[in-house]
Image (tube, rainbow, N blue to C red):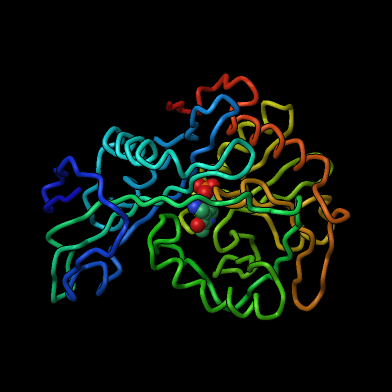
Length: 316
Ligand code: PMP
């Protein structure tokens, strides 16, 4: 769908996946005026399809658009467009339990600009791809390294929205970590270099004595939809959950650490390396708390337990 700076998006149409045409002076190419989202469609045992909280992605895109001086489609338009593309690609959705269809909405300044300014025209598009389960051979804990020098976000910057530039900012630290055999990077706040922020594409939780803690949302970390859902699931299961400043030193005596995100769902962290010291958790799998949360969330997403909170949208 296309829109001028006036905020009114055209209805849009389905097209075969392929290259798109952009002016070399498109706002997104020159000044990074772009946002994206990520969500998944799961196939149920009965063949129907479930989307998980798509209106949350729509609202997050709207929030990001405000920060990036972009118009954005309405929540209804966003959800209708997601439904249309999922139904049109139904044959690509893996059977129940064998993966999901990853859905990638993009919003960008596609109009031409020369001097620094918001683009005069915007494009909203969605593409999809089948993806396997994140862990092909059972649950594999991830190994993180704490990064002290390179930051993905600064106070007052764009770290709290899903803009493309945030991902460019993590490439260097992430590539270095991977080259050293780590799965990913855990970022610290850039002011004190002491409080946990998040991983390159997921949020982080720490468990100590059955109390679950996660960094509070304060503009420099992405408000993950899985994070928010896990907090609600944990509280409904009777756990105490704290959203607060989490000191990196707390990792040293945590019982469990886990990450949440659309791609990783809930993943156990097997070890964290900080200032050259490696701390390990669990024995090659989930800790008891994260396993319980993983189990409830994945059963909800796949329609295996009753969806009392109305989080899933069923399509057939
Ligand atoms: N943090 C970052 C930087 C991310 O890119 C993502 C993935 N969207 C997340 C956290 C997790 O968010 P969600 O649970 O909405 O996928």
